[in-house]
Length: 271
Image (cartoon, rainbow, N blue to C red; front, top):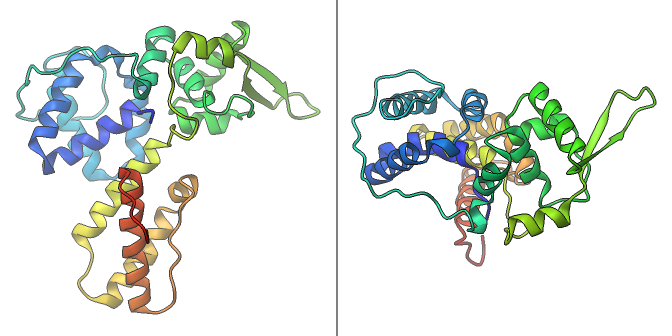
């Protein structure tokens, strides 16, 4: 399964409060491999996370800045965390690290993220708005990147309106890219990680702060599903809640645990 580095780093900065070893290893990896990390994507993704995550990342970023000259977003008091010295340069031939392999080829850039998004669906046309959401780059940056990829023969551009001012883009070099990149994840192995992490962290907040009163908790569940509707839509999963306080609580818990098991690859019969 293809990883997505920046949302992983943002989420880990928060989850590290629950696992100090995870935090230390993530910090050490970021310091060792800062050249692979996109400050632009971090800046564009961070506002989509809740305030506790932003604060945790600010302290994490401040600690990294003490060791590397990086323009990461966020402010805060640097974490008191030591380098473990165990991190190395990653093996870019691993299928899961196709994003880093693309960055080694195309640079840490919108071009690399566009190609990554198109890899599992080479025959599908993409609009700029959808690419902006998945790649976490602004539309102006994407337009320039798509133009360069089109000139290089990696992407084709098609007009969608009679006025000729709306375009869709499609991979036009799937065979060449496969030969260049080597072994890749399966086509269903490119999840929308930013949305997954937002939902995961939102579930953690919910579990930590939910009321012990069943009726109040049922109302909180309804608010939660409404707030997360867009991310859940892109993840093609949404809890089906029956009517009634007990039913809402039961259905939500079953859905949440089943969702996390599927993402962790530990789904069991009945989920």
